[in-house]
Length: 373
Image (cartoon, rainbow, N blue to C red; front, top):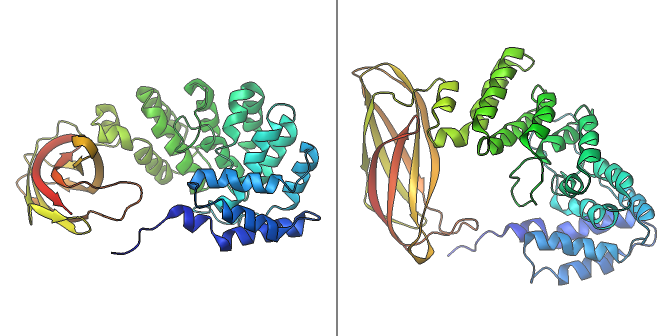
């Protein structure tokens, strides 16, 4: 059996730690790169991904000044080159460069807010400081929001993205922020017309988070942006689809209507499985046949009802197809869903499973199958 992919080992290993050690040796006088690498690598086996980031900060801190002002100068001197400012997307940076944010929170949060914010501004141009700005939002909400308003027009799109990403209500892996939608909507108003997809994707993800709290307010905001016409309509349409994805999965009629889909579309469907038993690591092939009494646009998704530990159940939604159904004419959609037995983020369990097809948020057909080891 193939060895499972380990994200923590992919991100933090001898090569990446050596890269960070070389950067600090070049930027900080007297920094012992060999000592840092040895200490950091020795502590990795017993730590998971996020804990490894904190551990690297521990190891760095031992060779940095205790005074935060001097420490911040050292951290900035050791920063890697900024990420390419000519790109517009998919340039997140490397997790090894999270350490300035960790140390900014540890030593700058209480008594050195201004200097720490300057450090975050510089560091986020190498690796997003979205996890670490949140501590400042919670400790200094008014002051930090005022700073974020300024950063929303920064020339560097990584800084602009931080304004949206750092204030997201449900940012994965991150601490919660005590902000209301009324506090974050004005920031999104400033960012929704950004020319870079990296920023607009963050705005859409932020809206998707808010849709779980204030769905109608999200729909109203998207309608307002459409009327204002500041963003290109094709990009705004993409943002709308991305922002409303959770509501669409839930069959929210307002979200469906915003995307031009009728929740009550007269659609019938049948699903056919190539086999009712599938092994982990293999694929479940299926075909869905759809019919409608009217010409209607449809958004076709499928959910898998998984067996979980202890006999519990959970569902995940997957995209299938967006199409136009024509009255009296069948539409056939084929798919092969792979059950990844070596996935590190979602563990499969043997037992009875179901696949459910939904059209415009409404369940239209389902079938049962058995997952085996």
